[in-house]
Image 1 (cartoon, rainbow, N blue to C red):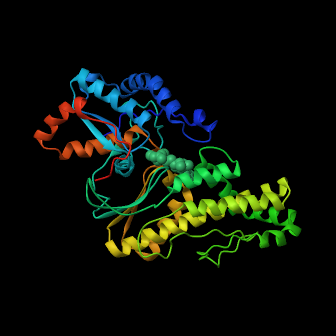
Image 2 (image 1 turned 90 degrees about the vertical axis):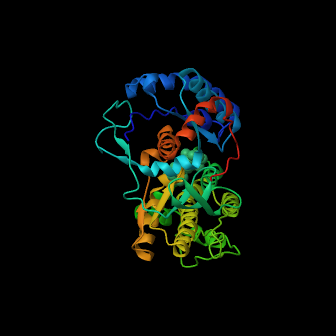
Image 3 (image 1 turned 90 degrees about the horizontal axis):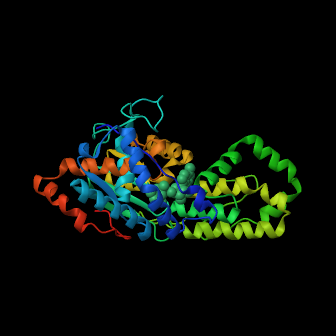
Length: 384
Ligand code: KG4
Ligand code: ZN
């Protein structure tokens, strides 16, 4: 299977003003953009509606106003074009981004017509059972896949998703929306030794103050980590026997630490600590994610470990999880979605639908013809 086009109409700039997605604004923008985007997609793919076999749409979970726009549009197309319609779980889409592979590194993703950069591929290099670490703005889950389209959630966050925590930390620090890429960029600054030296020399006499500002938590597990100002955050639930996560306490630790630093330091001195706060928060998140993934893999013995969701764009997470698998579970394959397809996109929904379609019986395919009538968006749709 070949990916003919993948058009994305991003609303990031619109929502940045509000520091997060505003549901009704999002729905209004979707209404405005969805028809021109279909037009553009057909043009770039070089297709007419007659050549379409099946229509796929995100059914849930998510914000109902936004989901309704997509689902109703897809239902209308299905009715008018007389094509079958498949509803896809958003996270299934993220997982299936792993089954899209880069064909040609050089060409661009946009407007490429039939010279597509991506192709879907079968399970040749993704062997089952597979363990997927799903990390997005709304989800943090460990999903065991015994086969294609067969999911068992073996652990998940009890409160905030990890992407949500990245976004909230960015908001606390005032470093912009969406938070994830910004926190990651500031954390990378901290890891550069030159930046570290600069901070130390500029704030030499502030070091004592900062030392007193250590976040002490009941879960202060990584005592060995010593950062230039000694900022430490908890690794929530890292030693718990189950595979669940919690990120809300970590976010609150960042909030309290930031408040304290703001009160004690001059604005310019406080700002010098932003890279360290970002680095330590990011590392605390990564430590928990990796530790739980490795423990789950030790118990379930998957042949492949995959990453999925918007936070899988995080370079440190990609790198450190790979290193941990090589060290602790060397025979296990490690698979990452293409960086360009880690965030929300239509290609991942199409890839999941293509696999679903290929496994459907003639009867099921016939039933999908009636989905223009039956399909409903579901804000809390479960992966199954
Ligand atoms: O999957 P996604 O695009 O949308 C949802 O389904 O939620 O994920 C968005 C999330 C946001 O929270 C965003 O801050 C986070 O992914 N994100 C990152 C990075 N890039 C995006 N988090 C950490 N590091 C990144 N490089
Ligand atoms: Zn997503």
